[in-house]
Structures are given as C-alpha cells and as structure tokens.
Amino acid sequence: MLKLYSFGPGANSLKPLLTLYEKGLRFEHKQLNPAQFEHHSDWFKAINPRGQVPALDDEGKIVTESTVICEYLEDEYPTEAPLRPETSFDRAQMRVWTKWVDEYFCWCVSTVGWHRYVGNMVKALTDTEFEEMVAKVPVPEQQVKWRRAREGFPKDVLDEEMRKIGVSVRKLDDHLADNEWLAGGMFSLADICNFAIANGMDMGFAELVNESSTPHLLRWLRQINERPATKDMFAHVPREKFGPARED
Amino acid sequence: MLKLYSFGPGANSLKPLLTLYEKGLRFEHKQLNPAQFEHHSDWFKAINPRGQVPALDDEGKIVTESTVICEYLEDEYPTEAPLRPETSFDRAQMRVWTKWVDEYFCWCVSTVGWHRYVGNMVKALTDTEFEEMVAKVPVPEQQVKWRRAREGFPKDVLDEEMRKIGVSVRKLDDHLADNEWLAGGMFSLADICNFAIANGMDMGFAELVNESSTPHLLRWLRQINERPATKDMFAHVPREKFGPARED
Image (cartoon, rainbow over the protein chains, first blue to last red):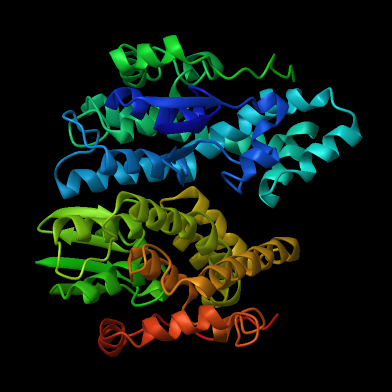
C-alpha cells in the first residue's frame, strides 16, 4: 500500500496529500512532528537521506520531492479525472507553474514563515539543545536556515522576500482574472502545487491578499477549498502546528 | 516548423538543442548574441517576456524554461528511442535529477561563470551604457545579477558557490560510479540536463573535475560527447562566446 510521510496539509506536504485525495487513492499516512524534529531522526533519514518531507513509499520504492511525487502519482495511478492536461502544450504550461512554485513562490513565503513560526519553535531550546538538533540536519543550506530562523532573519532579507511575495500574488491574481484555473482550462497539479503555498495567505499576508487587491486569487482559493477532496483532506488530516508567531 | 531561440550548445540552451538533435527533429535555429544583449531586445521579449533563452516556438505556441521544453518535446514528438524512462518510478528519478540541476547545480556554476566571463563582457561599457542595458532586463533578480557580475561577486559568495560546485560534482561522480546513466538505466533527459551544465568543467573547474577526483563523471561526459547527436550538434551550432575570463 502507498505510504505518505508528511507534516500534514500545508506547504509542500499538501501537494501529494491533496493529489492522493483528489485521485481517491487509499494510502497510509505517517504524520511527522516538525516541533520534535522527527524528520531529522535516523529512522526517517533512512527513508529520505535529505531529512525532508514529503516522501512517498510505494511498496518499498521511495519517491521524494513534492512536485515529483505528484507527477509520479499521475503516471503510476491514472484515474478517470486526470490532474494533468491532455495536450503537450498545456502540460508544459502546468510544469512552468509547478516549477515557478518550487523555485520562487515557495521560497519567499517559506522564509517569512520560518521567521515568524519556525524560529519561535526553537527559541525555547538551550544553545546546546539547538546545536544538537542542527547537527542532525543533513542539508548544509537547511542548517543555515535553522540558525537564521532562531536569530530572526535580517530586515533586508525579509523586505526582499516580502517584495517577492507581492510579485507572486500579483502574478497569480492577474492570471486568475482571465482563467478559471492556472493551466489547460482544468484543475491540475499546477493548481494543487500553488494552492499548497497560497492557501491561508489571506490570514498570514492580509495586507497583500484581500478582496480589494487579489479578488481572483481569493475566488480560486475558495473554489479549491470547496472541492470535496480538499474538504475531505482537511477533515481527516490534522494541520501542522508551530505554536504562536514571533511578535516582531 | 519548430523554431528554437538559444545561445547555442552550452548551459540551459544546450538542453533543448541536444534533445532536438537526439530526437532527430528538424528545426529552425535562431541563435541570439548574449554579448549584444539580444535576449533583452523588444523583439525577443515579445516572444518570452522574461527575456530568457531558450524558448521554443511550435507553430506559434511558445514554450519556455529549458527543462520544460525538453519534456514538451518528449510529450509532443515521441520517437523510437525515447529520452524518458518507461516506468513511473524511473521517470520520477529522472525528474529529481532535472529538478536538482535547475535548483542547485546550475546556480552555483552559473554564478562563477558570470563572475569570470559575463562580468568581463560588460566592463567595457560606460556606466550610462550599462544602465541602459540593465533597464531592459525584465526580471529584477537578473538585474541584480548583472550589477554584481560587473562589480565582481564578493569572495564569500564565490567561496560558497565553489563549495556547492564541489558537492555537486561529488554527487554526480558517486552516482555515476555505480550507474552508467543518471536515471532508469538509460540515456535520458536527466543526462542531457546535467551534461548541459557539467560539460567542459574539466577545463573550467580542473581542480574539482579531473581523472583522479571524478573519473566516473569524466567517463560519462566522454560517453555523451561521443554520441552521434552530440557530435552533430557541436559540428553545426557555434558555441556561445563570452571573450576572455576575468583574471582575479
């Protein structure tokens, strides 16, 4: 049986989760606790040596990288309602959107998220406990990110990321003003992968994502939240909890 | 007829070029001159508003992003010798490799390349000429890169990128020690996309890529260079020229 390792229905973990729900595939779900750094534990690094969720175990074959897992599920388990457009051109547009999430949109949102929530999560640790945790992180760039999150990211970095978030939501809203969905005139992996990052931004980034600035983005978020698969996912899988936000 | 806009057989432009040659597809080639900033000209930005090559025109439909173009060509023009593995799992491994090039390997090599070559290309310009050129660059992050290239990138940035290049060639060599090709036991888009960045590193990064440190990577580079399609491509398409390297 399929087994998904994830943090729950948010960010990159949401991508394969929602894909599984949309496709109606049965799977076992192992939800890791980020607050306990479970993804850096030896048992999980034996599954994904990079210590990152999501990861999919398909009868012993491990597939990593959230976007790759989504296309894998489409390739391996084709269903009557496909999540990938039919024509090569529309499929290419879908991949431009999923690539853009992974290379641009997810990073700016993630940095601000780490500043606000993840940093707070490790503030209570002593220096020794923190260093022990960081030593278990297998990716050097992620070690740097943990240190910066604990200190708080510098203001110029946060300002630049906020600029990029502004660019991102503008780009989405402009496209969604003329298109019901992101690619190929149908709900696809492009929508799932962007929804994974954009969902909830009307709360966390209300100054950028609101009825007057981004009505089309909000319409699209509502439409996805109203899908039976999305409702089902949120009803069954608890959200990741980081605790309260940093106040500065 | 297919029409490819590219800088020639190096870096991201090589990916669709070699894919077209491997597939034996006829296409028109429009080679842009980076030294004249032709990719920032209005006529090209009408084709790709991001002002980036490669871009593919398929009877008026424009596909951008080098890796996406490669999968598009596989989707739209399937040939007897496929460049994508058959099984979903192997295909996922291929995509993990092409994603890694785009998100990690190409960036560290690119920054050092910009420092060494691209910066030099704009040194001869007056400040006014340079600012006029930068004003035509549509992507803000690329504007920043042009400025840094002209000044020379800071030493700490270059040191970190060299560390990442070291990690990258080690990763490739380790994998290629046990595998003839990167994914699925066959020559695939994973090899093409990594070759695009790694080819020539035995010259430009001889301290990292050489017979004693990375024999398997060199074996793989030679094997790809000996393929008829690769020879054909290099015989027919002139390489991009940046002029002499910066000496510091």
